[in-house]
Image (cartoon, rainbow, N blue to C red; front, side):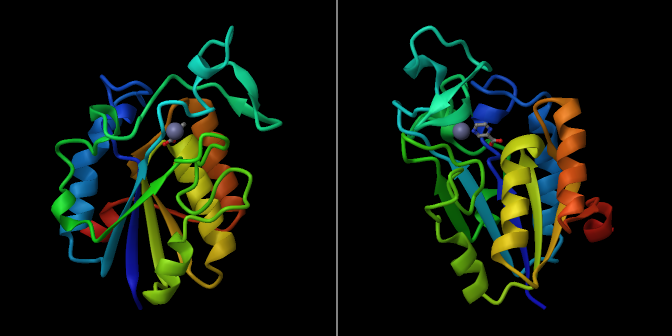
Amino acid sequence: MTKALLLIDIQNGFCPGGNLPVPAGDTIVPVVNALMASGHYDLIVASQDWHPANHGSFASMHPGKQPFEMGMLSGKQQVMWPDHCVQGTHDADFHPNLDISRIDYIQKKGENPDVDSYSAFRDNDQTSSTGLHTYLFEKGVTQLDIAGLATDFCVKFSALDAIELLPGVTTRFVQDASLGIDPQTVEAAIAEMQSHGVHVITSSTIVG
Ligand code: VGL
Ligand code: ZN
């Protein structure tokens, strides 16, 4: 069995003080560090939301639109986000307390200004792949644990894509190593992940 940990977007931008903060988002960092230090994982991958300054998911690119309103991007419904995780800025850096020395591979995403990319595996239009599923397949991963920010967006879509793109891989969501933007959508996201075959666990299963 080859066990991998996929950490989603544990960046300054999604922590308090960032541009698109998840409430208390930084509080998952010690939990994630303990997971990485547990010795359970053969492979640790982290995704990084990595937008150009003119990304089409930014409300600032749509005159008259306010952050968190619905808008359109390339003909599809799109949440208008505050400018966040712009390439090369502090907002896009991993949280300073995240033990990045344990990360084997970094998957950047969200670089195409014309489509958003919640999942670490592919863009929201589900046409262009990041290549991450091929990477994990080639490493022989059989168990994939997913944690990070935000449960109701990038974590959820990454877990759903793992189920679809990595058939036969046991995919688990580590609940206490993840936090979301809105409690209501977090609850729905967990139910949706479970209904697609994602197992919900807590870090105590791994860390003991
Ligand atoms: C995310 C909204 C926009 C996330 C990224 O990491 O969950 N959410 N970009
Ligand atoms: Zn983003």
